[in-house]
Image (cartoon, rainbow, N blue to C red; front, side, top):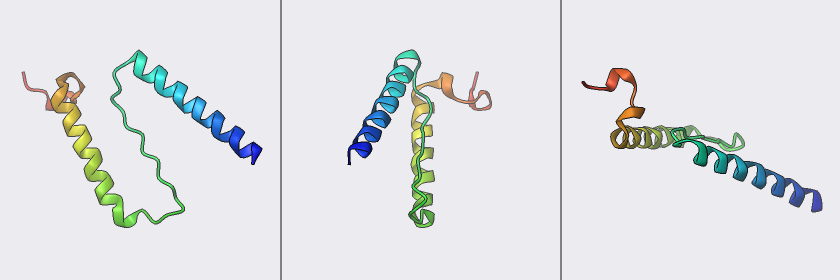
Length: 74
């Protein structure tokens, strides 16, 4: 049990530090998607894609500088 607790603590510190550095150094414009392959994601994958598209559309609408050059007007 002790090795698991040590592993969980290390993972939490590493991801926490990464999130802190990422959010403090620049405006976050990327989304990481982690899929546990032990579960069948086929039935829900369309919902994941829709949600990512919704996040992308909301980000583009709130920050025009993040939109691709082809989408910018003017």
